[in-house]
Image 1 (tube, helix red, strand yellow):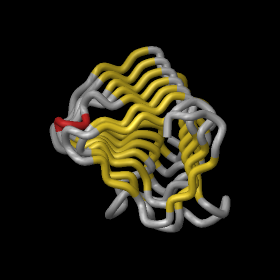
Image 2 (cartoon, rainbow, N blue to C red):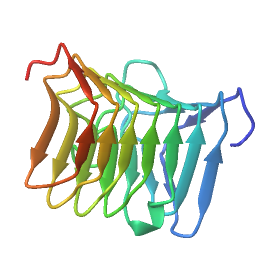
Image 3 (cartoon, rainbow, N blue to C red):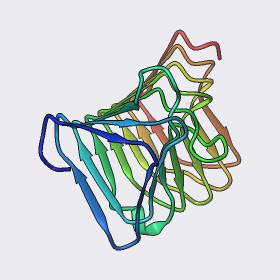
Image 4 (cartoon, rainbow, N blue to C red):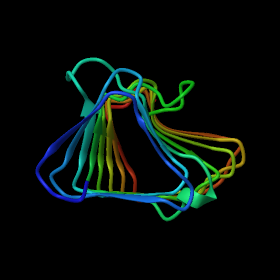
Length: 178
């Protein structure tokens, strides 16, 4: 998927095995069907790609970084939109026991959570635009990470931190309910 400019349709979702990697090049548009997830146990490196629903309306699942094997993953300058919820309501992007880098992305118009961080995950989340969710970022269950320079707008809650830590710097909150 490293060639640029092409549309890739995926109806069933995708799993990247531990030890495997997938690179998605700039300009690629990945269109996923209703409920389809990208489960990352290995490495996903996407720069300048767009992840969206196959019809522009129906919610696809989301992207999940699911263990320490996915900690070398990077989403950079990507658009993630119209995602439903990874697995059981875990957001457009779900981080569990992993530390991916998510930077300069637009995470837009998904259900409930833009990014859900859980179970000892420590992602680096910087300079993203996170809009149109119930929770822009939800951090739960002894997790943390670094969150800096993000813009949160038109969410119900910008960031919710539940029993977790982390570093939070220079984030901007605009037109969120709370």
